[in-house]
Image (cartoon, rainbow, N blue to C red; front, side):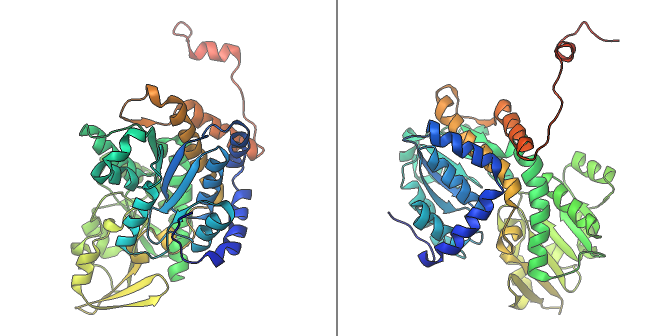
Length: 418
């Protein structure tokens, strides 16, 4: 078995951490039990480009239990947990191509290694596998039944492919499932972003002016948590409806050029590029902290910061202090990459349980239904989404009401009213 990881001897620690995550992922555990009996993925080859974390390891083991041949590469150079990679190789016999801190050349080499499986299904977090296939590995397309994608950034890229009529196989937009974006993006990103910032800096959030760039579900989640810890939160947006919602939620809303002068901590969560730019660094306070919790590090214009600086140094683990030519200091967290994974452990397992349940069931759906799907980006089927929510509530010991026959008739009828 070919693999490329940091150190296989880290496996014992990784194994224990995977077991801990597994205990907090009851929905995926139920799916794994069914997969073990039914083998819905038997003979299916799955290449995965995801964050190599304990939660992802539980997903990989679930897919393998379903009969799939799987491998895994990293979707971000700084998100890999090396002990988890080692355990997947040693204890699960799953090839992993991921090394924390790998350079750009190694990153794309690992993507090629993952695609060496000649997959029937690809599983993406940022659309790098699908993008690579469309750019340089068209030879793989005849074997591919479809792909799954779990990030906002990835969906943006894939919808662009679809709109330009260049998408070559169906994709299930796992990110658009209610049991994914309403929970993972909001509660997972909210908590884990705060966790990454605090682990890196040990700052007190209370009393800080925190600028949140983007008020999508990730931005909402982080803004909520920052305010809950006593921060004065400013939202920047380009979407008028989202900006209006932020105002109604009680936040200050203003253009970034104004917010840049006020903030103590800036966190980008947009999925776009250059939202924290050179013009903003020019007016930031001395000692301002800048972080990103969107998928790619392009949200922060790091080349502009480098150009404006006379020198930089690593002042804490995960914190680079840039000394600007006018004497001000800007502190960049996690090299501008996902701060919740570069400086912490990512989302809690209990919320990733739903996200990865979606991934597993989306793969099963593709295998069963690919013949009737067009070359489009599809939302997760509502019935599967609802079933994941039902299983999650059951695992939490929570019961809900059921519609009566009369209520069902009322909701489906036009005759009944006042």
